[in-house]
Image (cartoon, rainbow, N blue to C red; front, side, top):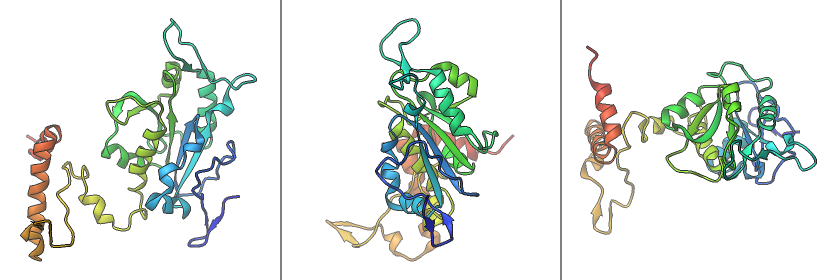
Amino acid sequence: MPATARSHGRLAVRPTLKPRELMTNTPDIAGVWKAKVITLFPGAFPGVLGESLTGKALQDGTWQLEPIHLREFGEGKHKNVDDTPAGGGAGMVIRPDVMGNAIDFAMNGVPPDRAKWPLVYLSPRGRRFDQATAKRWSEAQGITMICGRFEGVDDRVLFHYGIEEVSLGDFVLTGGEIAAQAMIDATVRLLPGVLGNAESVEEESHSNGLLEHPQFTRPAEWRGLPIPEVLMSGHHGKIAEWRQKMAEKITRDRRPDMWAAYEASRKPDK
């Protein structure tokens, strides 16, 4: 049984680097965001998600994590999960019957409305993950993520379930586990109560369509480089103006695509 969090009397999932009993369905806690991850490597979780603020929030029951071992749904004596690609070619493909059974297990009891509970396949051919996606997922009740391996998943599974395909970036990983952790981290930190200072979320990169302004701290001068004078002035209006100008300059110089979108969003509708 999961331990009881003394701070508020709710069930909590304790982060651990050891694989838990693989087919134990973690009890859902009403009102708590949950990530279900279908993976061939459940021992990879929580990984870095068990550290720092996300790990503390996981331990406190602010969010939940349930790795689901795909191998447990495998076929035959050896629990096979893959087969050769139809039409020939290199590599192996995850079987639709195996993945389908895992998805049915994961989605049992969750809201059928995908806005409330997205079903996502981490795929290099998916739409690129961004801050807006993390915010959308954080406003749902939870999410089910599918970590691919080999040459991917039989495409009939994606069609049958209407699965959302999302990519971490324009590169290929050996599997979806690293991408899942990155996306969960970006989402969980937006949940109420996870970060100590809610204002920091509003000011950081991508939150308002711009990259974040430069940050400084003590000492006032380091190796001949002083903190910009305006930040030491105590004039909040001038500081805010400087930060806005710097955010705009950095975005314009480093991400012309973001700058174009930002400029377009500022134009009044005709």
